[in-house]
Image (cartoon, rainbow, N blue to C red; front, side, top):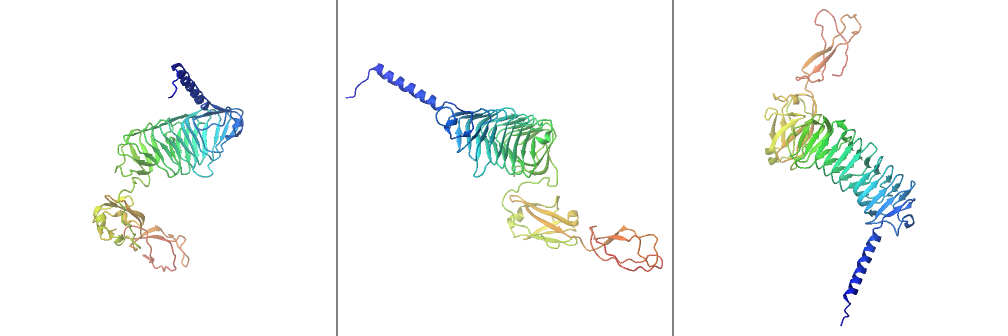
Length: 450
């Protein structure tokens, strides 16, 4: 038979376990502090017992100490005060709560091997603070507001991800160099007082709205390489409070709208197969205006015609695909949309181009352009085609010879003429000069490039 404890004794034991349990929790969550240099794993530099790890709060302060990681570290919160240097030493740093960096504190992070990251729940910066790393990804799981010319996030070779909104003011920056990407899942706003998102050959993707202030607007979104600005959210708005230019823009949703001043796309507008036309409020300039993504099934490969000239029809060939042929909606030579039948005909395995067609002035000009064949449900088929000048058909005087000459001597000013084909392109040929009036005898030869 089990003994039965009196009620009062049971209450005392229960109370003991409750108090004992609370004490254990309190000790495990005690904050750690450090004010001297050393390795993170050296418990002698930390207050309390052991070293700070998952679930702990840590503060590093003192007179310019340097703390060096010897393994990956995960904390609840971390505070680094004025003058402190935290050397990540090619290890990962994760702070589930807030990373607080006060004035002139430094996190040194240079990725040597593997894929390293700094992942934080939130960042709190003091004055003159920056997170400037090499190779590391910076991942922020909350919104971020930065203000002040000496406050910025920067990675050279890594990516920056902000899972929330991003607000930049008074010359604060977010910078990704090399081929790194910037991703903001929420809204992005900048007062444009040289408060910039900067990227090079990666992409900058904004999931929410974009709002650009009315000062120095061309620097709020600054791509210096081949990267795109991508807006991939639905029912979002790009608000520009000043005329604004971006080089490459990719639309992620047909519901994107524009407000305010015109946004000019100076190189490539990529509709990403969402919408066929440029959205109202945006304009496209430059040599690739209106360029779009390739959408749909692969098209046949085009083969350019060899030795094509403006004097005769020529064929661009492909492995025949009757379904693709029937889906062709337009053909371009350079930026010019050609007229069916007049400028080209589509045949099994080839497209015949006709420079003599009444609408084919582009085909009558010697040079090299891209032929683009657009077919519904297929990627655009393209090929670079060179068209040469035709045979000599006319002369045009370039330089008249000397008005006064001496018998037996060369002209002081040699005559020069242009040799042109039937469409006025410079051609080549032999020109024989004859005396029109008088009894002169002209002799000798002079060669000139046409």
